Image (tube, rainbow, N blue to C red; front, side):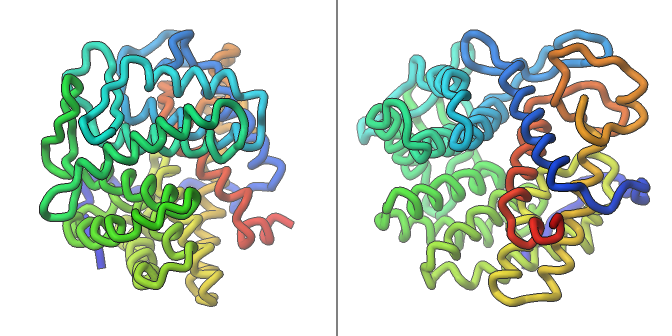
Length: 370
């Protein structure tokens, strides 16, 4: 079983919130979250990273991995909403602009002023490109070429211990740095979805190696690896490849840890990132006939969904702090990281919007909304 240090996070008693959110509320929350990301996009294609909606000011900060995460969620939404094409194509062009290539065909992002960046950014850009290609519109040949290059770059980051170098140099694409539980998890998901949905059987062996190494190497970092590892393992198990079936127990062990040791339901801050793992864990338990775990995990997900809706500006169930302030148009749909924190970060909105997207396609959770 994976374990993790708590990192000093305070544990609080749960706030009294509705136990469930309606399907209509969830659909509205996704619509608003996607709208916020579109409104936060700059003409260059990236996003305003943080915005204090009460003070009406941009908070100077940035993070390439989180920029890529926002692009991924927009690309996922584009699969169902063709009107998002201009915004998604601007995102992907931003990451491709000035890109570098390695001798073996790896493709990587080069942002002016960045001497190096994290491997997770490449994984998330790959996921965004994959979502674009799977939507089946636009210049599929060009985006398929980009996607193949990003995947090759992830493979080039492999180390002798099976994990990935955590960073890369933007001048020549050379890989260096210690592995990251986030980066390895994000790369595992990108490679898993590429293998499953692009018929890349050649990726199964590298995936098996990375999966083994990640579970072993990040054994004390469950919180960091949880949602990415869970989403990746669910994809690999869903593909029907027998070598990945044992990771179902890994998912259940990690989820039990999140609920019993990390006390996920008692956290006072936004935990949508963990919900991205909890929802597929509940669905996996349902598909495997583990009724007890399926029920437990889905009830926890329902509780968190209702709680998180209270943190969205202009959403269906805003809390008292949000109701006490009048938002401007650009804040609508953004999600706070805590009940009284007015700084809207794109990664918080991205994680929450994606988790609710998952909920809207999860049979077990949908049944509870009927």
